[in-house]
Image 1 (tube, rainbow, N blue to C red):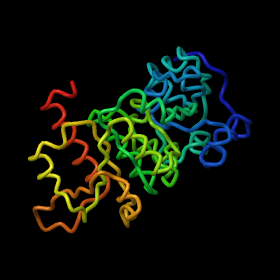
Image 2 (tube, rainbow, N blue to C red; image 1 turned 180 degrees about the vertical axis):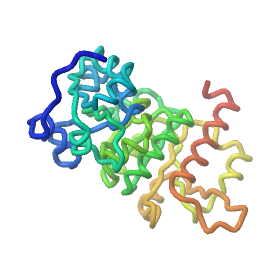
Image 3 (cartoon, rainbow, N blue to C red; image 1 turned 45 degrees about the vertical axis):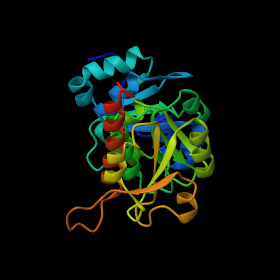
Image 4 (cartoon, helix red, strand yellow; image 1 turned 60 degrees about the vertical axis):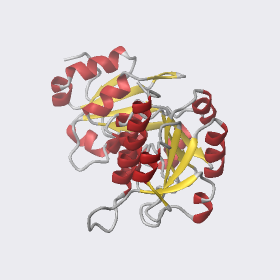
Length: 280
């Protein structure tokens, strides 16, 4: 077991500070967020941002410190302070019903939108008006899996550092650049200015995804704009984009949920780009 301080008290100032990070206003003030579970903590321990290592503190139960000794070792190697804690302390900090014994405190890692544009992205997911943190994290995971170059969350979308969003990303938050708080008009204009075709994903879109693929229009740099889970994208947002594209429904399903539609759209673009040789 890695060496660490004695069991930290539930009344400790460090525990109180960690507990407050479940609230958005405290996260924004401290520019810190919680990463729970072995997968997220492992990814955080291996990540470095512009200000240094992303993982700054780790709370672990005695059992978890033994079971995940390699992760705890990676956290210490990254310079994180490791606190051993009773299960009730972890439960107090954690936002899950069944904590896995590891809770990390991480620095914000979002990337300025301008840096994403300067990198010449080929595939981007833009979350506009997405309010559910679980959906936001899942779309981020889909973008990562499809090989997207970045994810952009507009100022009308949920906080990507919400614990539920972090969990739903299953570590993908640490894998690709994420810009936050970008006005949707600025996001679309910036991407267009960088030579990226911007498509709105909407079930009522006039363009069919299959037809777009057949016409070969999907192989260039592309950004997909995904809207609210319940009411989709407002007309003023759709009007900003180059085209509004629907995922065809070949069966009797009424519609697709946000994350499923995002996965279909992102993978369609990724395959078209790879077929043309635009992506490795």
